[in-house]
Length: 164
Image (cartoon, rainbow, N blue to C red):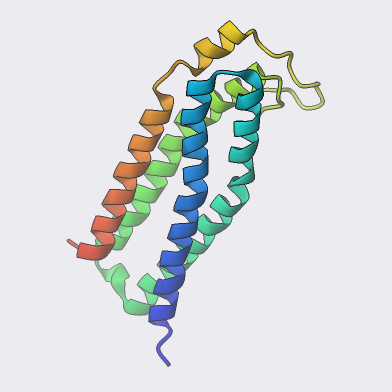
């Protein structure tokens, strides 16, 4: 029995799960900015955090299945799988660099613990509504969505057309 189509199916399903879970965070980011109400921002941050488990599991399965499929079909003799891995690394690094500190600041502004806190310290006092509005008044969600959409489009192009 040829398991290659099954591995590709798992790869595609994991990509779908990843996109769905990541979409939760993307839409929460846009909703936070338009609401600017501390309670709503806390709720949206919570919803976004809940999606992270599915996001990371899907990403892991996606990578394992993709690499397995490439090995099974002998694709690593071509450049496109290596380019795809490079795109994934670049997109993850760029999104992490742009999002992690920013959303830690947003979490702190609504009185939630974040990576900015020292271990053992209580959560910070919430910022004023004006300060929260200032923090949220950014094009960060569009920049992150842009990186994600362009990265996704390049990955699909590489996998479907196998240009090199």
